[in-house]
Length: 305
Image (tube, rainbow, N blue to C red; front, side, top):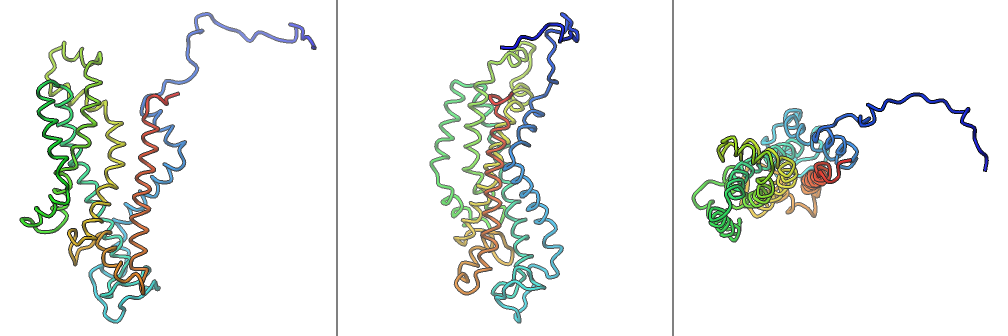
């Protein structure tokens, strides 16, 4: 084995006072999460797809040369053409405009419904987890009763007293849907309420409302973001399912579920009326779920490097 002389090497220099200095720059939790999310190519592609879908739901009906409600009986059940990029339906209405107008309705139901569930679930779960004891026992028994009621029965009962539409669907889905996030937040708060910063806030005289709102809920934001990415497609799917059963959005308004419901009867002879909305809802739900998986990995503190 060849030996090297010490004369071949030069000491660059060192300082005993800098031995404990970290070379890596200080990175916050959210900066590190964003860095790891950007490395997940699948999640980033999914995010881009969702941004495109959201933008098209806003401008899609505007860039179409035909209003989504305009009927043309000379062009019934036509395939894709120059004027009607996705063809027309059985009433001669432009499928391109109706597809993106349906996306606007479905996404609106998904986002509004999810925000309502988060608001109710975070407050309810935060109270259960923070106070515990008898308060937690009573409130969680109420949750179990609500969970036992199928949402389809709630929808049917609401349709007997309320007109069919977006509001009724959102109310029906939220009545039973908020229990999932409430349980999740309850578990997170029960783990965090014995943390040093919570004990310090309590010792300084902070009220339970302030502790829950300022200290506990903000520290569960990672879990909330992941839940949102999974709950929005669940709302979209439930709306599509209800519209497919005829319990959702009613004509002349439309949604992805209503388009699929109308297109399935034309599937044999005019498949484009079914295929385009089916592809749109499938891609959107897949993108939301893949983005949710990426967020879950990026926000997991155990994976920080």
